[in-house]
Image 1: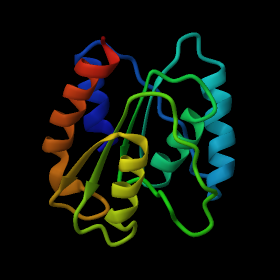
Image 2 (image 1 turned 90 degrees about the vertical axis):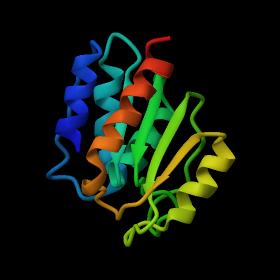
Image 3 (image 1 turned 135 degrees about the horizontal axis):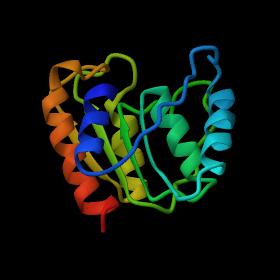
Image 4 (image 1 turned 135 degrees about the vertical axis):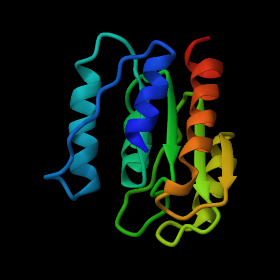
Length: 148
């Protein structure tokens, strides 16, 4: 997903950076690392994340200035993850109806509380069968929110 989405971002004129979290299993350690990277940037970024990365991106967006937030099957409302503060930026969420890891209801409730745009699609947690649809939605997101 991230490679395909990186290509979309590049095609509309965005540079991109992926943070390496391989050695960090704890979500709060990942939040600290992401905050460090975001704090070092000249301009407010667009944060994109999937699953735990969606949680991490949302946590960072609630504390630092970001242009917008795009998350896939975010680990909202999961046991062991601290509650989130709703970020003050445009938020778009994609979640699969058949997600076996993160209940779709968690994204529905968060989206309602945040007045976020929510796309519920026919997919599981990985959403790999929906990459083309995700990339189309992501392109529109970049064009509508990030470039305006």
